[in-house]
Length: 211
Image (cartoon, rainbow, N blue to C red):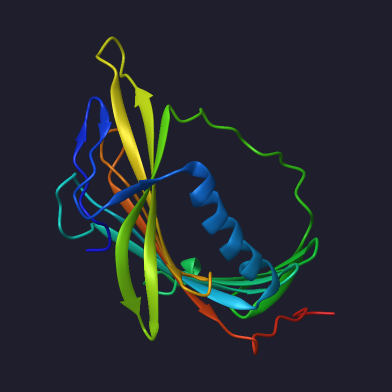
């Protein structure tokens, strides 16, 4: 529904007549512009993550919904488990600078800082960039940009295969991102799709929940 179909083959990704390839520099200019807006404007993002039982499945087997609010430069409020039937999965998290607070079952607690480091994954084997036309979102006309990342893998002694991850960005004429969809295929694990919908709201306030 969200992504324009792409035909993959051993040589890479084909481009239909209405699509156009763009350079990495052109794509980075678009991404850097919308990141500047996110870095200075209060906004919220509604997330929907879906997993599918097989590649061509039309309906997801599991859907998770949550949303987050952001007040630059360092305030974040997360609301998790919005569609969960398990009360233990519904909770809030507030980050203000280096302080982190969580609220489960109506009680706020401040967490101790974590000393864990970042993990690293293997690099992509190919990255291509496209413009996929335009679409109206609310009262905004957006241009759809897509990054297609290919990663080679093999299971045991089997042949090498390429798995593709497609990241699509709906960006309005003013340079703000309005929607994002990231979708994997089912070659490495189950197919998944994450949709993010952006709303800019200067009235968002995030305060320390406990003293």
